[in-house]
Length: 122
Image (cartoon, one colour):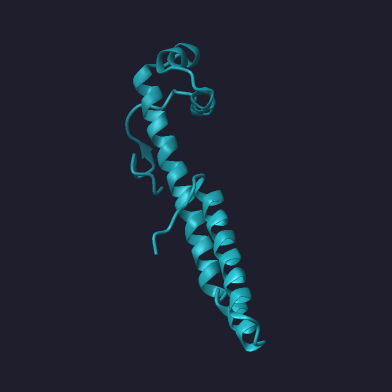
């Protein structure tokens, strides 16, 4: 087994008794640590430990989504539509408008992944 709390297939330490699913749902409902601890029949320290674990998992998932999105952007050349427009001898103003639309669409996509507004300072 690859679990760090296991040696030669033997579990070391106490078995975790807290109900992670219940605690996480109550945390999302914005209840206090004490209320959650009373409902889930565990200590408020266990509630905090579950919150820390939940945030860590959520951050890891967010980072993987962002990495996938960045990889997809690298695989697709972002300047390809702009190059095509310039080859078609369109006015410079039209090319700039299309470029701005593409940038705003990319920013919105990143904001959807991160769950917040994303601003670049170029």
